[in-house]
Amino acid sequence: MSETAASLGHTIASAQDLQSVVRTMKALAASSVGQYEQSVRALADYHHTVQLGLGACFRESPPAPIIVRHDHRDQAIGAVVFGSDQGLVGRFNDDVADFAITTLASLQGKPKIWAVGERVHGRLADAGLEMMGLYDVPNAIQGITPLVGRIQVDSEAHRDRDGYSRVYVFHNRPKAGSSYDPVSLRLLPLDQKWRHDQAAVPWPTKRQPQIMGEGTSTLRALIREYLFISLFRASAESLASENASRLAAMQRAEKNIDDLLVDLKSSFRRQRQGTIDEELFDVIAGFEALKPTRKPNG
Image 1 (cartoon, rainbow, N blue to C red):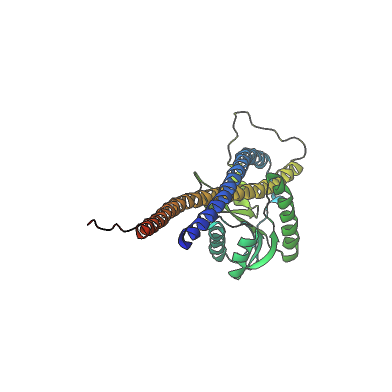
Image 2: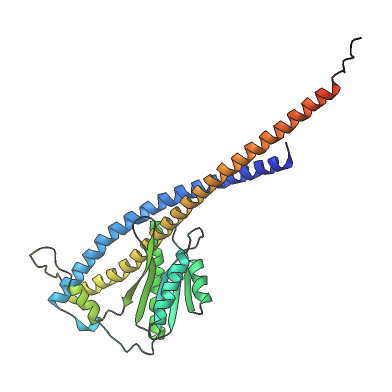
């Protein structure tokens, strides 16, 4: 068999190996995206429950000492950006980083960034933003709670030291299919507008709730839950978007490899048939050359 056919055979074998890897990664992404999407759905219900509790507290007795507002013109801005540690996610990190950069540029104050994921950290650092911390992306739902705890502790310490009161969260939120949109949430301050928005959430029944115990302690507990669940939900939505994006990328890669293998195998068959034909012609030519010549009668 000629060198060209042998080279095609090696290329086909390499493409088939790559196809196996892509199919494995596709199966892993499909398995992961399911658990994160289920978590996001559950978090939406819990988030709404916390909002109902906050609204009930504010409607009954709005305690002013918890709700603060500052002059933000010269203050720094804290920002948490959720990205990815791994590749094969298309523009996942670029999209959320570009959105964060554009949004923060429109605000007064110097941004201080905590990044979740090495790739988005590098993208934001290249844009000249001040990076305050880097966190690993959780590889399961169970890893989100420790991550949120570390973010809360670190951001609280820097907020007390630097005196900033604004904190924004940036992440990708999944859409129908395998797409996503970069979104932002102003986590802090808990100002009058935020209080009004929570109080406007309607109670689901006609019987109005009663706040048990001391109102301020109940409100503080609900605010802690609100801050925690907001970061938890952002991380879960980011992970769901990441795995959906990776699944879509693997599906495209699988299709491209399938198309490539069809072309390669067709070329290989033509090359092999051409080689076989050449060998047959050589055998026939050799046979004809070796045939004895008949002498004419006579």
